[in-house]
Image 1 (cartoon, helix red, strand yellow):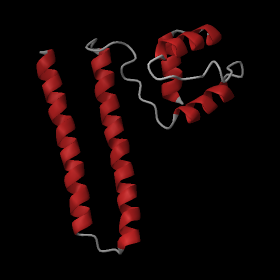
Image 2 (cartoon, one colour):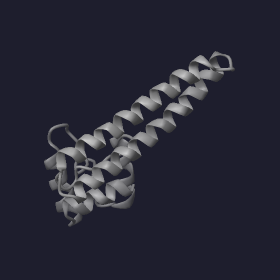
Image 3 (cartoon, one colour):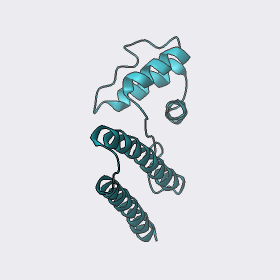
Length: 133
């Protein structure tokens, strides 16, 4: 049953990506505007499509997490850069220092440990805080 669910979700994601690609191609071919206007319009369209895709993937990951197909925290998707998130965390939690928020790829567990110790929250609570930023 889980494999069927994953296959179905994969098909939905593939169909979404194909639809976005076809829409972008049609927009370029049928564009009534000049180059700069078309590029601006395309940027806006792609940005919206990216946001829609991110929302779709997040919803799928949330469902997988709720159904215990994936581990807790798998659905964490950050919007913006780590520097943006860091700035928000420092504003909301004055006790956090630059060292507390140092992120090194592959050493995420150390970051979670520092944040848990400093904020007195569980990993899931910290992920929710970051997700809500």
